[in-house]
Image (cartoon, rainbow, N blue to C red; front, side, top):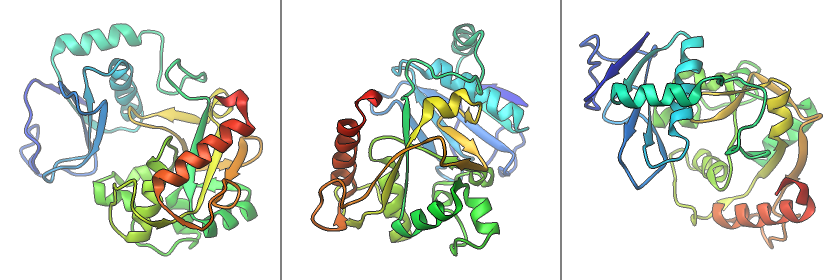
Length: 264
């Protein structure tokens, strides 16, 4: 079900049921913020929330992806925006879907999945990237919960392989190492690998979906034919495995674009 509200307070009480939220609820909000284009997480005990700034060029598409994806997954949604804004988004979205098999103008033709060197050895052996829930069922990981649970990620997020760009994946790697969310791009950490994948082909093969915040793949993804290149501290020219998320990301992306100019 979709519920639209003009006003909303982020706390632990669901304004629709007047009871605490359960895992069936998810929220998106349209804001006037100029500090971000998109912000995600659970705040003040609220359900997982995606906030879009109306100053972003793509909020209308993202809101409708959010509705389409979560309707397919039987989620209860709260949309915090005016009816006029919602109708404007729907008009722009006409003819699109959250799982359409082509890249949009704002979507990058490659993507990155960051992980540890140890995990990369297992991935190579399997020949697949796998979501957290599958890895947990196979006893390939020992942590009790994914690091995203600290941000309030819904349990079903762990059914998907998450991708990113820029430094986001390295922040996840460092957060896993520290056992807490670390957003400092200049913090010292042990570098892992940046796995560069052909997102255009992944999307065109019908494997990716958009949830309003991410392009992601459910379950598993074979390395072949989507793997382009893997960056390590050695092949990007670092003198040590110890670096910072920002430095490793910048050096890896620069080397990737040098080696594969077709993905610029």
